[in-house]
Image: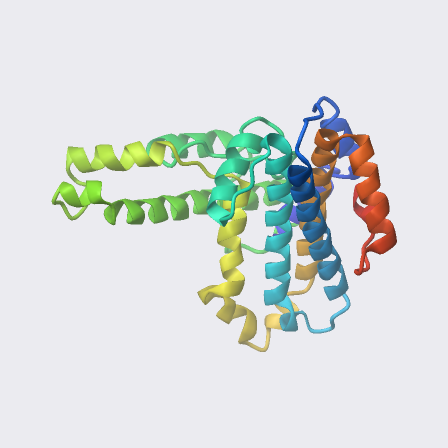
Length: 293
């Protein structure tokens, strides 16, 4: 998260830079329901931005680290959902489905700003490893190392997490293959036979990993076993110094990007009305002008 925060700052992700990045994006004709879906998801995302900003004032960050991660994730998820609907009018009702659509409709089409643009197009080991190798332009760095302090270290950390996510999603996919009828029909216990490898690689070839896939995995730090390490240990509060600020910085960058894209797809009339209404009637602290202006 520190690496992403550093790179968000380094790349100068702002409302101004996002407007420039998306200046060539054309307006799309959406139904009223589709428009409302885009705006509803952006409202959800903005609310999560406001929640994280409020958490900055909590003295002991261990008290709110878990809910901070949850707020971060659901802000990312809502913003990504808005981008997908603004792109093709669709809305998925599950997280993995949204990640697949965002990767294919947004990331694959170069509609994502740095540092959120990295994408591995396949889970087949040899091909994914080759793509990851080509992406690594700095010295390799373990995630267990000290937090990054400069651009090179930040890029190495972000690359290391992407690499780990590729392995994690490959494992999940292989487990689902093992449970499939096609695999059971082979009457094998592993992927050592040619037929089993062919089945595995055929499924892995059509899977990919982008930033939203990474966010899904990161959410597990709040909801699953990793959460133990946020709630136990007297040194945890000091280790979390700056963590909520990093979550907030990264989410703000992503929501800024998503809103700017959606503004282009919706057109100025719909967008300006939405922003003006939120400025006047929102219940939370952070104003849309603080993110999108």
